[in-house]
Length: 203
Image (cartoon, rainbow, N blue to C red; front, side, top):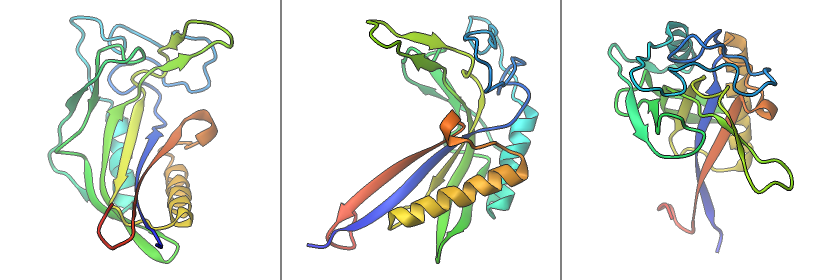
């Protein structure tokens, strides 16, 4: 049987802003010293009040316009609750039903890939696993960095199309100055959802 792959992509990109998403701690991906770009807000201390980074919002809307998205006149943030050592608040501030951008399109090779949504959230910290150690360390410098998430429709059918789409998006992010999108530094991360089926119905 010949299996037909149906692929949807979820792509995260760290935005190129001076400060983090909800506080004034520096957004510095090159910082080598752990836990120096932190404050009570991005560490989730009780009583702190986050304030949205206007530049991060502007950059996401700019990307949305470049991808022919509909830009929302009203948007909101939501809490995505899960417990993990590199998430200091115990929840991630993200977007769900009212993202900034919806219904976009980007050509990958010969095919148009439809974009479901482009929304804004905050990044998590980073776990470090020293070689040979029986413990892990947590660096919160990245916690709270503005993170754009793009979700496609299941329009991709080959690995080549997925690669072309990611490269085209990377070019757009860099051209707009929204993100350096350096995958080796974790500034752009691609999650691939694959369905394999012998018919036109999704498996």
